[in-house]
Length: 181
Image (cartoon, rainbow, N blue to C red; front, top):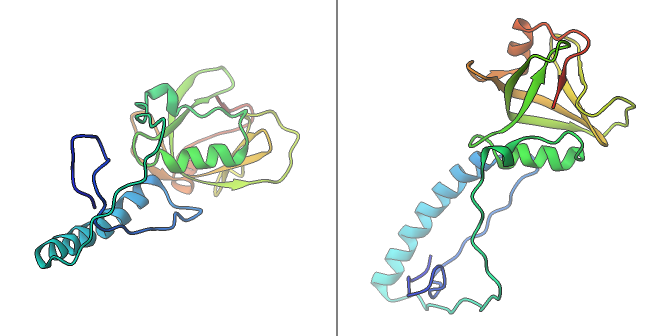
């Protein structure tokens, strides 16, 4: 927490908390954790201001600060030529909103938008083309990327509701030739 002055985010700091970001945590999960932690910090700050026990500290002067860029729909499209960790972290960082997405393509190149809300990663080497899919048709769906595979866990087809991968696969027939891109 900090006092507001005439510059953006440069007021004197009153209190601060830290949190660890877990390997599987999504932006939505982090938001919810920080919302709870932040509410306690605000309460602690108000009590400290009232009691006079807080000593404001100047923030360090940082050079070349730039505002965060706006995220557009195309920024959220998954590039399957990237490495598995980059794609996995992108999905985590955009979940649940605005959501990482890709195109699911059938063998006749008919495309439908597919949002990916939760995933895993598999760093096992493969010789398949980036964007090719691997599935048992029941429990898993993997998309190949440059150095492994992204394992879909929770997805949403355009115009449909969000589903776990096993629920999705019960209604899908992703035989050979389906890809993402």
